[in-house]
Amino acid sequence: MKKGQKWIGIFLFGLAACIYACVTVNIYFPAEKVESVASEIVKDVRGEKGSPSTQDKSSRLRKRFQVFSPSSAWAQDMTTVSNPTIRALKDKLRNNYRQMKPFYDKGMVKEGNDGYITVNQTDGLSLKDRRELNSLVDAENQHRRQLYGEVARALNIDSSQTNKVAEVFAKEWQKSARQ
Image (cartoon, rainbow, N blue to C red; front, side, top):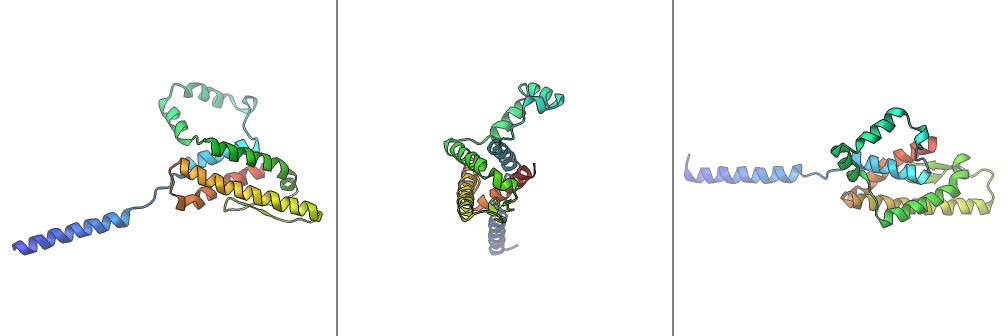
């Protein structure tokens, strides 16, 4: 092999390695963490925290022994997301939900697959009640949008993936609405 060909080969190998490195860079999305956080937040907002009397004996026993397991303690730290903004948003969402609960019960509000709610049908509502419902839905969606952004920031998720956070939350909101 000639000296010039050797350098061309090295250059091409280096170029190929750079291209490969650029192409394979992707943005990691921690779906399991987001699912855990979403479940926790939705249960808190909707008031679905399980009481000890409703838990089975095996889950109570498992919780007692979790203290001795460093891996579970570490996992809990990684999926618990809380800061003043998130706590304030959860309070707003909890208050909003209490006001919208009658509308949910009548099927007038629907959980979308995108993490936001829509007005489903308003038959039988006065004009004033429709305005109130639309205002509640707008406020709920605004708070949810802020929540998804905060959760993404807290979990170090790129802001371009906030819609994925919303979609994960959508599944939890929908599960909660069916109960």
